[in-house]
Length: 337
Image (cartoon, rainbow, N blue to C red):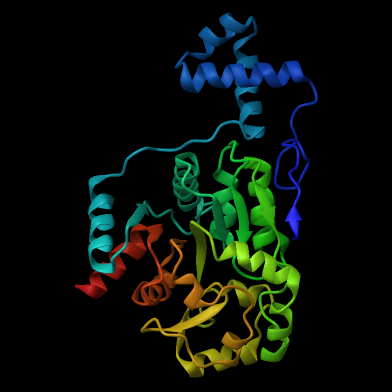
């Protein structure tokens, strides 16, 4: 069934910082973090309470951060962002819309705000208990979401990709996103053991007919919540598919000629939100757009270069939710108005 085994939280995975070898140091670090962030104690108070120096307290709190034990969520939004959220929901028929402040392009991690907002949303949905099957797409935004998600107990949740899991860069693919989610939640993860695109439409049909693939697809179609990223088309913005070598210049030319402006789960849409007539759409492996229309899809995407892509996907009526930044929200609303 291509399940991903549950792993210990101190796995040593490259995306998880190792925990200290000394359990007493780890315990002190957690106590210091609790006293600082939850208790509101000063470093002097914590030093006295734990019987260590102030410098030691500073190092212990830093250690808690390195352990991944401290995750910051900011509740609420400025009024301006709330107006943008309400405007997008009203004009696009969204049930959920979260707009975050845009970080400057030169920021060390310009997607940090987006990742934290998406992690906060996912955390609340998982804690609600109404998500039994979580569908996952791929990309940098979802990878950052998982980075920001705190450790949780969601052992009853099945986590499954809705498109092929085999791409060239592990840290961004659906398999790795789910693998790290399993680490943090204790959920049950699945692998869809096929690439994003087959070589031909005929090869796609053969791969999709495999029992191991159909078993996972059977779970994916039942997803209660599906989190996805959105992509721009080459020459209209940065294309992660092009960067990773999943599509080439010939594919890019074909997509331009067909009028493609947006990519969602390996499928390309025109400015009206319709599937373009391009061979690449016939080679995508995963759930079809017809199957995805029955899903509660929440997209996580930001950046001015993706405005046209996000607008097209909204026109397609595929999304129930959108997590984006204020630049995108304003541009979309200006175009509509």
